[in-house]
Amino acid sequence: MPVTFNLPTVLARLADGRSTLDASGTTLRAAVADVSTRYPQLAPRLTGADGAPYPFISYYLNDEDARFLGGFDAPVRDGDEVTIVSAVAGG
Amino acid sequence: MSAPTVSLDARLSAPTAAPPRAAAWAPLPLACSACGARFEPAPTAVCEHCLGPLEPIYDAGPARVLPDRTLIGLRAPSIWRYREWLPFDGVPQLSPDTGFTPLVEAPALARRLGVARAWVKNDAVSHPTLSFKDRVVACALNAAAALGLTTVGCASTGNLANAVAAHAARAGLAAWVFVPEQLELGKLLATAVHGARLVRVRGTYDDVNRLCTQVADRFGWGLVNVNLRAYYAEGSKTVAFEIAEQLGWRLPTAVVAPMAGGSLVTKLRKGFGEFRDAGLVSGPLPRLYGGQAAGCAPIARLVERGGVGTIEPEIPNTIARSLAIGSPADGRTAARALIDSGGWAAAVDDPALVRGIRTLAETAGIFTETAGGVTVAAAQALADAGRLTPDDEVVLCITGNGLKTVEALGADFLADAPVINPRLREVVALAERS
Image 1 (cartoon, each protein chain N blue to C red):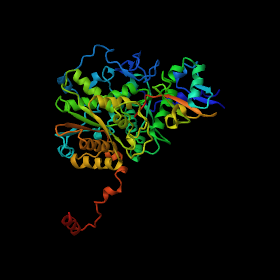
Image 2: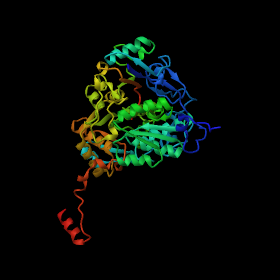
Image 3: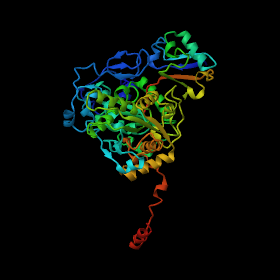
Image 4: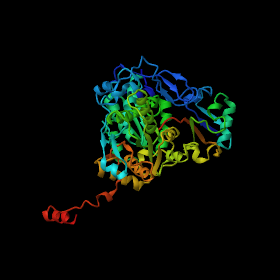
């Protein structure tokens, strides 16, 4: 089972309407690059020009904030879930 | 023939009471604060183009004539006396009596802090749920009703949960409220009693927050601090408006407020600025100071770095659960607001915040919750560091009531409350010893 990406509706529109995508890679960066290559319209909303995570989204790896797991260097393996949410909510 | 089935979404969106009448007010259109794209009023806080945050557009409605001091003074004592600065056309009708809480001068507190004058902006007695969240929820629910939503909700550390549950019950809206499992009993009960669907989530507030962004996307409910956030957040400006009016249309030199997500201090700066732009007050804007618990202080840490870089998320470890947001979405903006105002931030440990609760109670007669203890302790720390001076006139924003977080005080608070027999001589003995 590959890595699964879960997208919010606003990003799914840039992935042919698909809210769930499969990806491959051994790091989060590699998995994001894989998705970006297959869905070029989605790419600019996944990473910024500097290669860092796009500033208005948050990445969760198996429900953990990816920043606590090494960010884009976090290792991923088959069966992992990467959930992307917009980063605007707060208390 | 079998009965028609009702979809999950339809069942979950069904209101618990009669739906509200069509609204005679309308929320304002929205614009992306990052790319400038404009959108019609909607339950969305995220730009479709760049995913940036959306803000209401105040110049897009019918000619917006701002009231003067006299007209404002004639209006009812609620947040709606400032409605031209709130994100609606027309006059919102839901939650008509929230706001205009007391501004209490506290000379004993001022002496303790070493400042010229001190006031407490006392949202601990906010109507109806005893926290400043009543303000933002009043705005959000008026937006929800005007947009035709029948189900609202939130991700909350407690006060917001109470407010959503209460305001929704009065408005006849269904409510789903998501909170961390480990929340104070008082806050849980004060939410459940209104009939909201209360869901306790294993994990931190940040886990709840992330879940609710997915919930909003999936169900289309009006989650006040998620997809209604653009309308919700504007309600916090009313704290600034009231401070200015209650001080006699003048500004304090400094304001101290707690920081969880960071929205309050951002909107305080915006609110004071809007009143000055409208000519209702003059002079320099107050220096803004934010307080956080040391066990969860990502915004304070960013301020200490001069606002450079990004928020470094933290896993919360503090009894100040209402401020336990380790990944504050408005954190960078809040840090910027503090620094640009000439203010700063302070992080205080749990024993200090408990002393802060006691200090406020003993000097001003106000019992605040843990967030308020953080505010008072932060003010003391800032004063001790010379950031609040003997010339300062300071307002402390006390955002919630102490009865909601009694667990934080601990049994030690009763150490000086002896149990006696009903005999006069025992009272005499106590009095002679005191």
